[in-house]
Image (tube, rainbow, N blue to C red; front, side, top):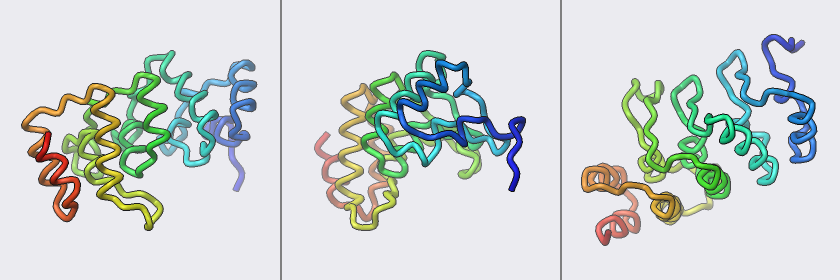
Length: 174
């Protein structure tokens, strides 16, 4: 399949190392561009290297776009939390992503969905990961970055903790 520069930003085709990304930035490549399918480079699965991911997060943060949503309304933080990427979620929070952000996710009929709710419903790609424990780690991370764990939010999270007894007990203790 031939890709055209008008529909696919170069950065989506480039190597994903921190050095390659920095060279692209220095050459003037705009990492904020969006693919025709609505994808932004900050949401790319190919950015496995934490250092490379941090380079991209820094660019988005400096441009005030760290909490920008994709076509579905998800932020990069909510996406990383949803899939249990604790390391990438930490990087995004360190670069200023809001632990209190709420997306209107088109996949859920535009219903508001907070990053904290994504943490409670996390779906890690590794089936061996204990989702209950991972949800707690993600929520602890969000709380450490000023998540406003209000009584209303706590109640919502407890509803999402169905089938996760450790998470339910953790929330009860708060």
